[in-house]
Image 1 (cartoon, rainbow, N blue to C red):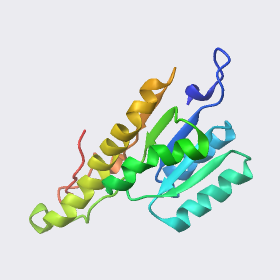
Image 2 (cartoon, rainbow, N blue to C red):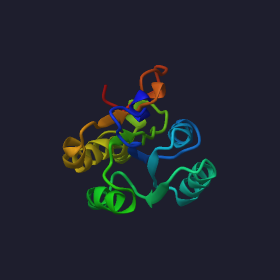
Image 3 (cartoon, one colour):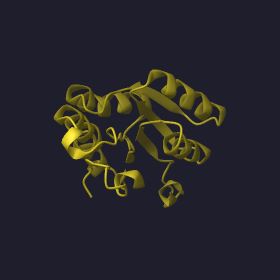
Length: 165
């Protein structure tokens, strides 16, 4: 997370961070808040988002919350402008959204479940990256971080993982 250090007089970074769930998500958001980053917190669960926002507020870090399903293309395309309006142009995009499908034999996995996993784990971060990329390119320094779980990489013979590496 060295990108949050001051260099050449640059101000603190603005980060758009999606999926504020209790494990990795809120930990990353809280570390960024400790470093006084401005945070655009994004989650599809309003309750989890409010909980994370409250913890970030306690650290006196400026933040704005956005309820968003990363598989909703129209909502994703509108997010960069909403973040810019609330916090200024983003310097960092952290794609942390991810789900897993039921651990079943591939023959028992429905195509609907497989498509949903791909929409959240692959298409969602891709759409977010494409939506934020024009603004990130215009910044003097910008970063994109894609986070995935090791659960997507390892599993038993019955596990079927729909994630691209």
